[in-house]
Length: 273
Image (tube, rainbow, N blue to C red; front, side, top):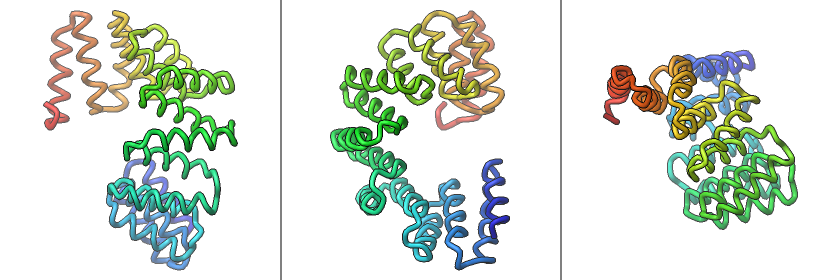
C-alpha cells in the first residue's frame, strides 16, 4: 500500500489526478484498515476539488485513527472549501485542544476568521501564538498581512520588519511588503523586496509577477517583458501573466504583440473576455 500511495503522490505532482486517484483507491482496496490509505485518497480528491469524495475519505481515515492530525486538517480544508465555516472552526478548535499551537491548525483558523469577517479574532490568535512561538515565521507573516488587510498599515509594516530582522530570507514577508509598497506608490522599494525573494527562489511565480508590476510602474516596460516571457512559457495559459505581457508590450510600443497576447488570453479564458 505504501508503494501505491507513493505512486499516487507522484502522479498528483505531475498533475495527473485520474491516475493519482486510481492508485490511491488501489491502496485503499489493498489495505482498508490502514488510515494512511483513505488519507491519501482524500488528499487527491481534494486536489481535484471533489469535496464530497474527499470528505468521505478523510472521515474514514478518522474512523480508523481518531487522532490523525492530517485527516482532521484535511477534513477542515474540505468543510472550509464547502463554505461550512462553523464546522471548520469546530474541527480546528478540537484539534488545538489536543495539540495546542499546532501551526497548520492555527494558520487555517486565522484564515477562517478572516473569511468570516472577524479580523480581530484572527489577529488576536496570531499574536497569542507567535508570542509563545516567535520562530513561527509564517504565522508572524500572516499576522502582518492580517494587520495590513484590516487597515492597520503601520502595525503590519512593523510586524513584517520584525520578521525580516529575525529571518531576512522569509519569502512570504518579502512578498507582503512588496505588495504593500506597490500599492503605496513606491514601486522601487517593492522591486527590492521582489529581488530579495527571488534570491531565495528564482522561479517563484508570485515574486516574478509582482516584480513585473513594479517595473511597469517605474516605466521599465522592456525589463518587464524580458522577465514575463519565460514565465508565460512555463505557465502556458496563465491569464494574469498574459495580461501583464499585453500591457508591457503596449507600453514599449509593441501594439501588435500586445494585441496578440490579449487575443491569446481571450481564447484561453473566454469567461474573462
